[in-house]
Length: 558
RNA sequence: UGGGGCGUCGUCUAAUGGUAGGACAUCAGACUUUGACUCUGAGUAUCCAGGUUCGAGCCCUGGCGCCCCAGCCA
Image (cartoon, rainbow, N blue to C red):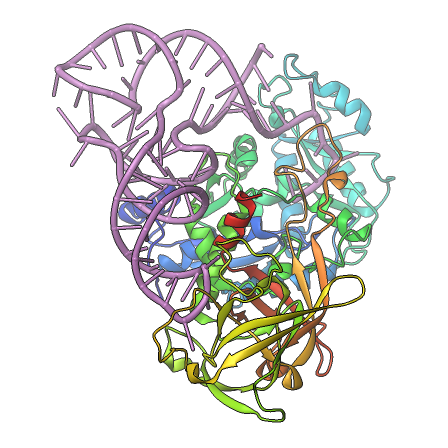
């Protein structure tokens, strides 16, 4: 099964490899997350890249958990990651793997290196090791344990595994070059002693492989052809090459690309975890988070995420993508697939004084203006309506094409033109009701006398309206780059990132909206029923607003 | 200032020695029973300085700027 080929430098490499038969025509990629947090949009780029490459080139794709540090990992994260990869469409077939499944094999490889005199057990503690490592300008110095005999190293390694030494007391190190300009090559740690319960291997091991030791082995064992990773691992490539060459095993090609950065958010798992733990958000899937689960809950579709990732491309250039690009991708996708509905977020009562009391008309409304196959639904009309407070101004400027005292607008779907005759205010001077007249001859949307109206607004029949809570989300941070030096990112949280409207009025068709399924509230934005939504207690999330050129005009005139 | 990487419109991204193109954003207009969608048009870029060449974003030299690396994290 193949799909249209992506166009970027990694596909170019794959093309070349296919042409030269470098991997006998195979393309085999993988997504290798550590289960220490939820996946975010940056990971979606990696998934789309890796799975996209496999799919487009008739290859295979593995999902492999890099679970080499039991202290930080958890089954909850494994579950969420699997769900997210599947939701994105990443098809790993039966190729769900865990680094921990290879622990025994990795240990055997380590023994092999020890026997070759290429690895040794070191008694230096963490602080001493740091001192021996040197600095950027200064070469490191050899560990006093660097020249232990093979026999002694073998014995010590066996006893490390057997649990004879305390946590941190010893490490197994590769014997490479303490003077290397590349600090990763200054005798890196391969095994450390950690007595922590592992979510899969339990208490079987008390030594755990370091990422640098394990990662290349995992790709080798799985016969990955193209080991795609982010730029910061380029410095590690010589180390992986060294391990694989010394071992004489299958050697994938590592290719680095620039990770995805988005403005107005943070992307580090550490910071996201802190936002969750400190309750700045309601959880990993709070729709304001940049996580995949949050995006899903908010109403983003996998297709929108794929489109977004295709649009931003794959390069080696560090860049920051404007969230507007993501919002645009969501609008684009939802614009095609979301059925149209009418919903009033901030209700303002309208009474049509010349419309018969008790009369109800039913209109057949199109579910999508450009796609008749999406069908129609019935919408009730009556003497009392709700319109959005934003569609009325007591003293509107000339360019405001909506309702104001004496002004006439058309009502969407019904077509009726209504004119505002009177404004009812409460004791505080707030507008609470509009008295309007309706021109019955304009039913359907055209005036027999040929007069035009500039605006068409949405509405909901008051006696038929369904109540709902609507959650409006905005960017989580007020700063483009909350990571930027100088301030604590938590001081840059947007206090208005969540606005809850408790009293929205929806057309009845919305009462049975399926969770997460996108709908367009006409003239307002794309929404979906939230996980919290229940019959009789509806909750909707705003996925993304519609573009709003009036907002621009209004902002400018201020 | 050791090692590695990267500099193209505001933001992403093409152009692999031959007209600097596209997307998003912006501005102007058309259309509109969504101030949406769609359509039309406009402006805006090769980090700098030399060199090679008929011709350089691309090759060479020298600068400048940004990112990554001194975890027993990944």
